[in-house]
Image (tube, rainbow, N blue to C red; front, top):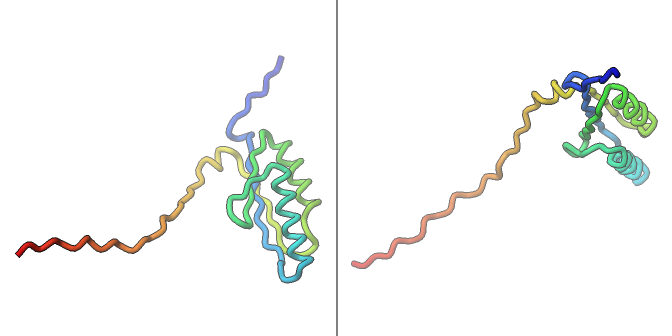
Length: 112
């Protein structure tokens, strides 16, 4: 038996970046349909126009990329990036904190 050992260089992540027009009602409907199709195909929203998906192999990634190409609306820009799990492991995510105004200290009680 020949077992193929999965490693961080064979497991893939797909990033889909897109900028679709949403000026008209038809364009908005097509953009919404594209986002919903990505979700149905197992993608997760990383940011509003950036979706990611984990794939167990390069072959699986190729299947999903082929599917995305068929889903792309006629207008707009869609970019697809594939990276290995090893490369994805080097991602740096920063979530900023909301800055809140500093609370004023409570008034001191004066006895004299």
